[in-house]
Image 1: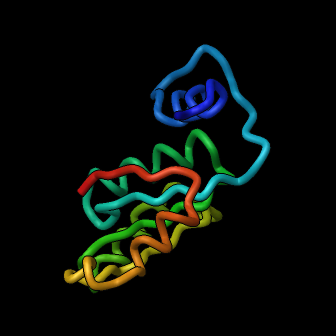
Image 2: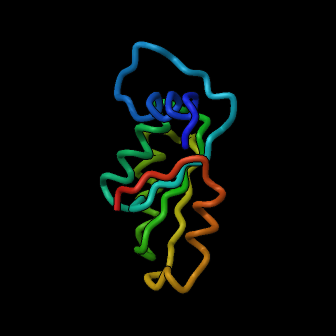
Length: 111
């Protein structure tokens, strides 16, 4: 179960406009599943707008989708910490995605 603070931080990250500010005391690592798509890159851009110190890991199945997706987000935030990780289409046989998610503070599913 999420704590009230975790819910408040999540609310702050996802709201387009907020009447209150929450200072995040750490640099959260946010995984965006479906990160190579338009919704994934839009979510990553929005998150960096709200929390510029966040590390964004875009995750997708497209082998060549990462460069374009990363460039799209970095257009708005050239100093942002954004990376792309390709996961195999046979992800059930791999622990790569599980490891990425286990090391994240937040996971957003846009796939």
